Length: 131
Image (cartoon, rainbow, N blue to C red; front, side, top):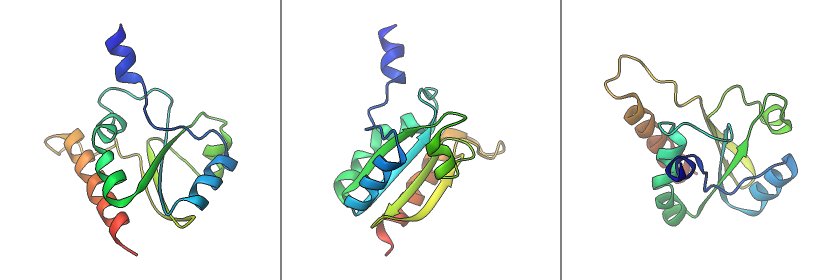
């Protein structure tokens, strides 16, 4: 039971309102916000990203947060989230890009979780290094 709780616990700092999101994206140069359900599945990209996100935090001073979305969430409406997980990348308070429904991958790919992870890494590399 403890293992299951550990697997489902998110270590991302959570932002719970539009005001909190606005404050963070204004005060930090690079911000990535993950919009997802409270408890993601063990095979979800959120868990994989959590295991290697520190590379981006250290190398690019990227600040990563999570917003839990619910069907009637103010955050879901404000940021036009259709389905989670959705990653939104902000630079100097402006939305630069977003990656939506990354768990949905091509069923013809050999390893869908690896494909999603590679897609997220490539996207983050691009967002962190482009001006």
